[in-house]
Length: 215
Image (cartoon, rainbow, N blue to C red; front, side, top):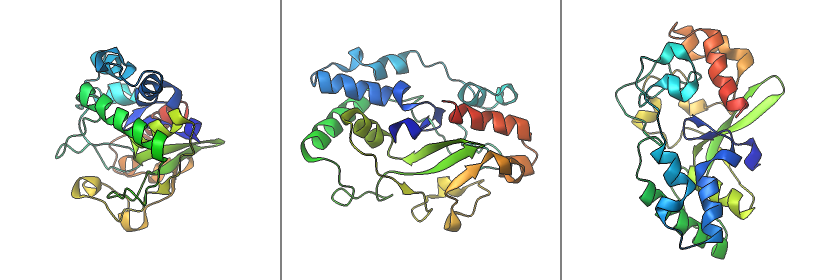
């Protein structure tokens, strides 16, 4: 299951390269590790993402700031009304502190989303696929899934259902959140909002998809 996960927020990243996962392993080995000695801290220090091109590897998006909301299977075009700075512009020290708390709690008590309810009701996501490739895109629960993977525990997730969607989740989106899909397939790229709107070509949209599928 951890090997199925293909992202850290919007960043295409396999779990074995995920700085939350690697830092959780460091915390398990040394619970008192200083933030500045962690993989996550180093990941943040070396961050050079400036545009959506840096996020997705598509040169046609080099003029779009990285913090615009955009996923080609969801949005008609990048949305600048809200900012998405997750795991690009963040406080690494606070993130490490959060991971330490999660590692301690889950190691001692396991993980029961019903006992610790949140807005989403647990780790949520949906699948991305093309041909024989199929990966899980985590919408909510990046920290929890990384810690569970580090502990070797099962990662239980529920499909994103849109019931807890905020206004930022639906602005500029061409998907019906009341019937949110369990998967987005590359075979259906022509029907993706960004392609139908003409913002991006189908080959470019597939290039983005494949960044996740091959992460």
